[in-house]
Length: 177
Image (cartoon, rainbow, N blue to C red; front, side, top):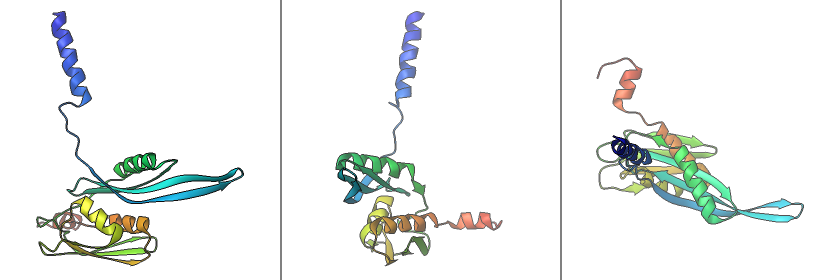
């Protein structure tokens, strides 16, 4: 009887550890690492700031920013920050976005338009990285205003957050499809 209880407890412990559960596989892409310095009474204190995009290439994406004394820790902290800020958005069957959308953050404006299959991601800088990590394969994007990489990435996230499907709009308007 006691041996059966021990085996049952082992099974419970193993299932708690997550041996049967598979976590979703996230892709991390680095946008920028910059060396920043803080002037203090004793001199300059150097640290590193990392901007990282995290996504599952299937409609989930997030941008993370963090500072640390070395590059590796800054990257790790930014990665965890990106996982905390994940958003989900709809993707069409042709791996594009459902409709035209505009995203704003600070002085940055991003215009995104769906594109035909096979055209690829036509975008520049941080917006391209965000779209690739998010799993969008056919889209046209234009960034207007500032060239700040962090603000452009956040404007792209804002644009993706504003995407809706036909069913969501019909539900909001209390209409049957």
